[in-house]
Amino acid sequence: MVKKQNNIKPKLFPLEGIVGLIMNTLKMIRYNLKIIFGNRFIYFLLSAIALTLLIVGVNLFNGEAVGEAGVYRILTLTGALLLFYPAAFGIQSDKDARTMEIIFGIPDYRYRVWFLRLMLIYAISIFVMFVIALLLRYTFESFSISLMIVRVLFPLAFLGFFTFYLSTVVRSGNATAAIVIVLGIILLILSDEISKSYWNVFFNPYENPSDKSELVWRALTTKNRIFLGAGSIVFLLGGLMNLQRREKLLG
Image (cartoon, rainbow, N blue to C red; front, side, top):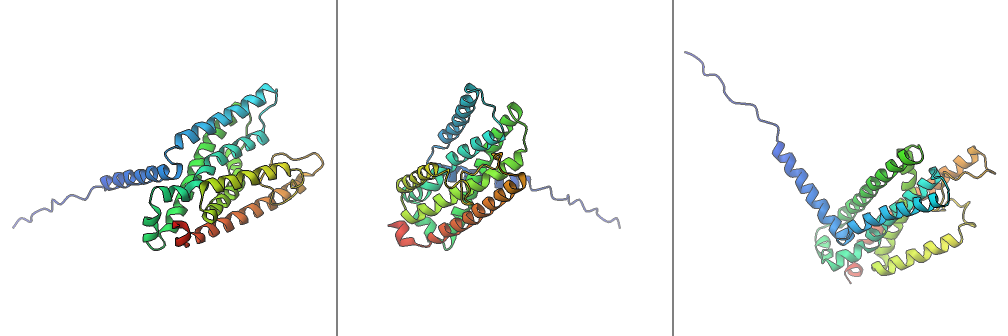
C-alpha cells in the first residue's frame, strides 16, 4: 500500500493579527490624545515649533550663537509647553467628557489609564524634542542628542508630575494652571537666590560658571538631578494615589 503524503501546509505568520493589533493601538493612542489635548494637539505642536523659531531668531538677531546651553533652554521650554496642558487639564477633560465615571467603574483601571496617558504624553514630547534637537544639532551646535534629552527630562518630569499631582488635589484645570503659573513667576523672580539649590528647576547643566571647577559643577548637577528625580517619583505616586478619591474627583 502506498502511504498518503501529508499535504498539511505549515501555518503562515499571523500577519493579519499583528496588523490588527497595531491598528487598535493607534486608535487607542489617537482617542487618548483627543481626551488629553482636548482636540488641540496640532495647536500645541505648532506652538512648540513657533517658540523654537522665535528663540533661535532672537539669538541670531542679537548675534548670539545657539550653544548647548541655548539648546537646553529651547528643549525645556518646548517640552514644558507640550506637557503643561494635558497635565493640568487632564482630570477636568475626563470630567467634561464623562469618562471619569467609566474609569472609576473598573477596579484599579484608573491607575493604568492615567499612568499610560502620562507615559504617552512624555513619549510624544520626547519625539518632538528629538526632532528639534536633531535640526539644531546639524544647524548650529554639535552635541549628544541622547544626553541632552535625558538631562532635559529631569525638570520636565518634575514639572509635569507636580502639575498632575496638583490637578488631582484642586480638581480644576484653570485653578491648576493659575497656581503653576504663579509659582513659576515666583521662582523666576527668586532665580538668583535659588540658583545654588538642589531643587532649582531652572538649573542648566551646560551653564558652568567660570568661578566653579568642572568637578564641583558635575557634583552639583548630579545632586540636582537626584533631587528632581526623587521629587518626580513622589508627585507621580501622590497623584495616582489621589485618584482613589472618587467622591472628590466626581464632585
